Structure formats: structure tokens, C-alpha cells
Length: 234
Image (cartoon, rainbow, N blue to C red; front, side):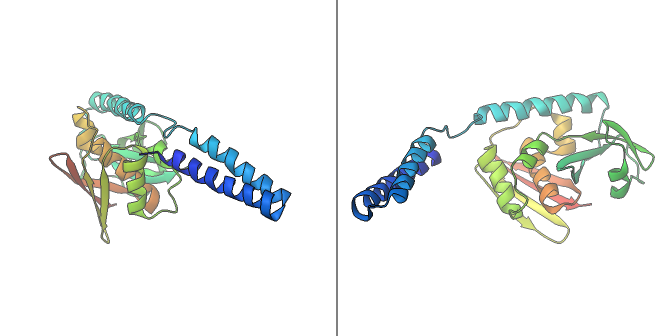
């Protein structure tokens, strides 16, 4: 099956040939003839483009490497608490992870006001500010105008190919994301426990980015190669 650039290129070439021929021989119109020739040239250019500028396997490898780096940091601080994914600041989603179990944890407002460094203080409580692996992917993908489900499908299925499909069920205070045939995982227990699997973590980044709200992972269920992740708004 031809990829989308080849299909686009062939369409432009066909249209350009018809337009140029009709304009030159029938209409005797030079500008339209030039436009047709331009479409043919553009078509050949589009057909020569690679389907993916960055190989998907390379994207997955970079994601795994980023997760393992964060895993080492979480191990160093012996993190046990759940991450709170924060709405984008300067366009980039971040995550705050408390460093100790405290029934009087910092509020979301206090977390937003915390200094933006790796080890920080929010409401007098220590925590880590993490840049999730999916944060930059989400920011660079220009999904602000898409619906939440469209955005998650685009990032997880089209951009990263982490799963074959994704669906979203949203309630007033929670969101459930169902991901089918998840293709990438890694041995990062603390990361998975605190931030979710790679696919779940990126889905959380998309939700925080699109909804402009702080969210946390409530649960993550694995069955065969599928994942169902539930998030709640903070």
C-alpha cells in the first residue's frame, strides 16, 4: 500500500497533467498551464518524501531511554507516591511527585507556584519536578484544537505508534483511556508505579495539555497487550 506522501504526490501529478494539458491545448491560458506544471513538480517532490522523517523505532527507543533515566532518579529518592501531571507551563507539561507520604500534601496551586527545579518545595513539602518523556512530543504536535480523543489517538497511534487504537470515556471528574495492542513497555517499576506505563504516561500528558488541568493516575489495568488507565482531575 503506498504511503500518504506517495498518494498525495500521485494525486497532484495527475491533477497537474490534466490541468496543464487542458489549459495549454484548449484554453490557451499560460498562467493555468504554469499552475498545472507546478502541481506536477510538487507531486514528484511529495512522492519522494519519506513516510516518517524520524523512524518510529527510533522514537520508541528514545522514549525507553528517557523512562530509564527517570527511573534511576526515582530510585535514588526512593519515590513511592503518585505523580500529579500539571497543565502546561510555557507549553510544556510537567509532573510533580511528593517525596514523602503526607496526608496534608501540597495543593495544586502550591505546586504550580513551586520553584521549577528537579528537587523542589511545594507548600513546605519536598517533591520532584519531572519532565515526562511525552511532554515535548505533545507540545510539538500542535493538538490544542483537537478533541481529547482525537489528540490521544493521534499521539499514541499516529506519532509514536505505541498502540493500535485508543478510546476515551470522560466524566465530570475522571477520564478512562483504553489502549489496544500496546507495543512498548520497559522494566521500570518505580516509573510505572508512580507515573504509569509509557503509553499511560503520554496519555496523561495529552490530557493535561488539552484540558489545561492537573490530573493524576488512579489505576492502570493490563490485560493481554491492552491497557485501561483511569485518571482523575486534581
